[in-house]
Image 1 (tube, rainbow, N blue to C red):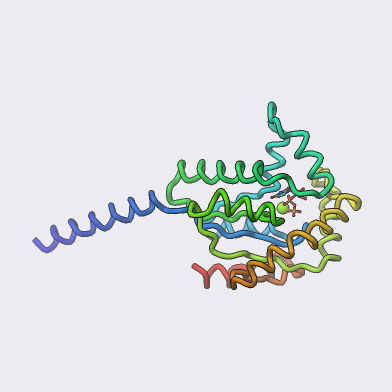
Image 2: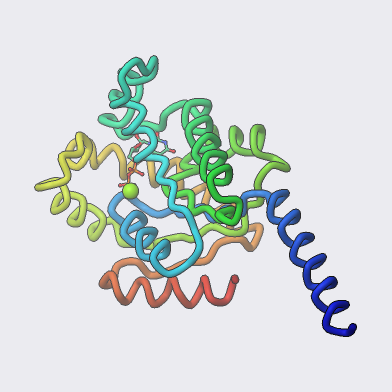
Length: 219
Ligand code: UDP
Ligand code: MG
């Protein structure tokens, strides 16, 4: 009797949890830091250890640039080469679709690392306009890395990455964009108490230990 009651209750709890997960809003961590700060590397490690999907805004844009028939291919290519930030409508659309697809495939995958976004005021306003109430930004994971270290890493990566922007000329522009446009966004989140900072000038494993400490604390 008690057994049956218990199994009934547990069944109800399970179906409630299931329904709650269907209604789950995407939980987002913005991952920011200079070019070469290690965002992509660390996101890959996070995905191996936690239940997050990694969405790199830069990778999504590069995929769109390469997609046959894309009306934005040319525009994206020139923005990336110049280290400029693509108009937010394009980026948001790619991010939103990627989140929707993931959650349609597996409703338990509602945690997202959005890497390399928002990079400027236009990005932030676009996000707030389109995603307000549709996703929760839990915090910003900030990879704090000395600019000289960022430059060295990107030039090293440029030897094999095949990226059109891992060269000295593009890199200077990217760094400028980062300092002028992205840092103020990080500062805005800082004022809201929403930034978790990791010293990213260290080795991959040392940085990841810092990341883990944050994620274990934040849940
Ligand atoms: N980019 C953009 N909007 C974004 C993310 C990236 O316009 O939200 C463009 C921008 O030109 C940037 C480039 O894509 O310089 C490369 O971004 P990525 O995040 O791949 O570079 P990383 O910071 O990881 O080196
Ligand atoms: Mg990256």
